[in-house]
Amino acid sequence: MNALEAFKQTNERAVKLVELHKSLNPIGKPHAEHSDILRAAVVISVSAMDAYFHTKITEKTARFVRAKKGVHLPGRLVQIIKDGASHDRLIEFMFKDKPLSHIASLVRKAIEDHTYQNSGKIEEGLKILGVDDLWFQIGKKLQISKDRAKKYVQGYVDRRHRIVHRGDLGTAMKNKNKLRNITRFYADQCVKSVGKYIWAIDSIVEAKVPQA
Image (cartoon, rainbow, N blue to C red; front, top):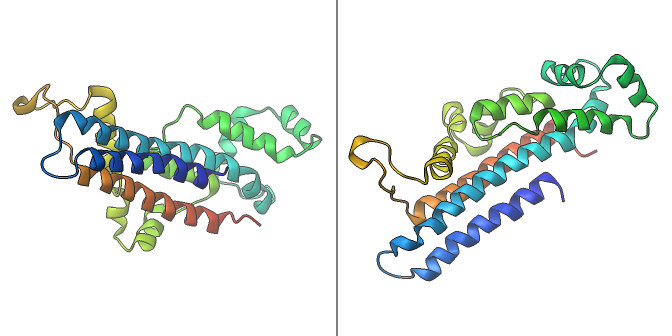
């Protein structure tokens, strides 16, 4: 299963949670005790996005290096290779089966502790594959401005952080330690927006590093 397929499968779990909430609350005001179903949908959707980047960057590395014939590689990728292997180790790679898979392994190890949720980190991560003008390209795909593209899912990412790290409790004086409201519409928009965002990014990466 490739990165996009895995993302779709995980994001579909978030879709099902939103649908579950609807089935439990078909009419009238939703029960407050069911609101955590919606929070779980937000968390899973953002997590699916994060996992997508880890897998996509790694699975495309070898093909990208091959397409470039090892020449004029992005600085970020070159630095990862330098930090991950000595000259002697790189020479060893040359005589192994599928030598470029070992370069991909270096990248996998280098990014395994990173999170790809914040726009800056996402931009930095995709530079490994030589993707430039990311926000302009996303904006073009989604027919929105460059600035809006950069912030397209950031609000949902911030909400995910509040849910995970503070239990979605308020921090301002007026709502401190009170559970923040969440609606089915909000969770549904989160899941759909993350899906569109990843669709746009995947098409950009595939154009940069095609399958064949």
